[in-house]
Figure 1 (cartoon, rainbow, N blue to C red):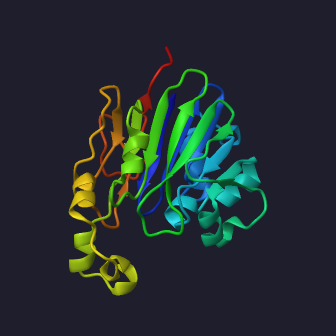
Figure 2 (cartoon, rainbow, N blue to C red):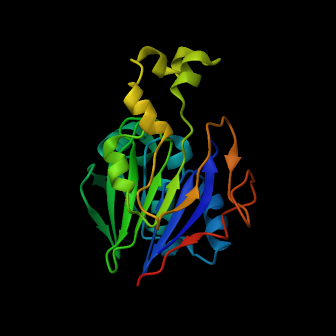
Length: 244
């Protein structure tokens, strides 16, 4: 299994997952021209992508999904909440993701796990190679680490995690209420805040593909030798785990 982060940040998010003969995208938050350019720089044709799996409806995660599906024949997977919250997706040809239920795409199985984010029905995606059992987790816009999500990512071989939400910053920072709904919500318990700050993976095999602290309005893409702010394109030093 191979993962490549095509881009991460407020201007767009997308992760390429390759396993066996199957290629899928987790999110497509760029326009089709940018997605094609970044895939082709890796030697991957956009038409070889079988499906795009959306974590939630925000534009920086869903922008290129419908156009990519129409242009290159991708199947689109999304929760019902994401579908209803994203007008550009429409209602036809969407495969509905149900949290905690397995969906199969070629050689991989995907399981959506609910996350805490300001969206209709956001999910993290756990991807499993059905031929050998290698697992990867893709977690975007994580707020509080729930017990269910922590259980889901335990034992994964590859983990992509972005945590850019901070309730205290929203409550106390220079944000209007429209952008800071957390102000109107009860504060998270000490236990849940502790889980958010202290998310431990109980598997020595897990490799963190990328992780960053709360940021605002920054476009991130990995570069050779590490994860850094850049706009040049996808991570050529992508994560890989071989079946044994």
